[in-house]
Amino acid sequence: MKNLFRVCAILLVLLGGLWFSSPSYAAITSRMNEADAKLATEYGQKIDLNNSHIREFRELRGFYPTLAGVIIKNAPYDDVNDVLKIAGLTETQKERLQANLDKFTVTEPSKELIEGDDRINPGVY
Image (cartoon, rainbow, N blue to C red; front, side, top):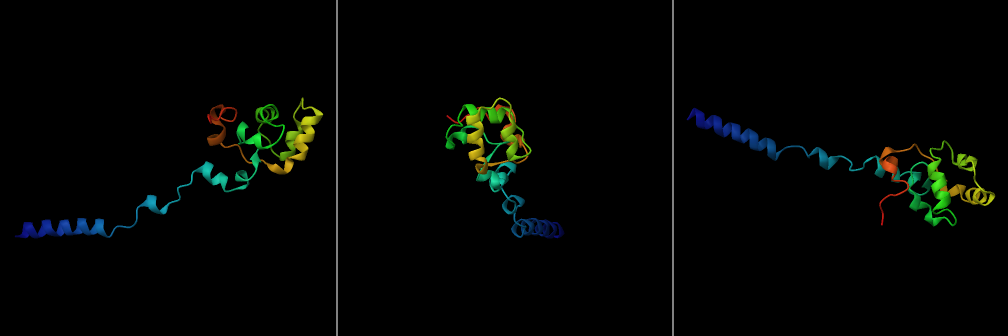
């Protein structure tokens, strides 16, 4: 009888622990990784000169693919105006850059976004 009482008590404790357990950690934590968190910043609204891939420059006339490729190959930048200092730019390219500086931002390079040469070929077909 004592053994039966012990077994019932142990089962009651175990089942009670499962029934009244706190919510799982996965349910209460944020599901954002570093790249998703960056989208909530200025990176999500502007073209990031250090992290955006070449296809994002398509919305700007005269950038895709030549000027966008030059910008990407000369990254990283400390400031948006650093893009105007790229050697070998034509006057037309400098004028296009100057006219669109307000559409650019610069954030720290993120390995999730630039690793593996994904900036030139992001694999979007």
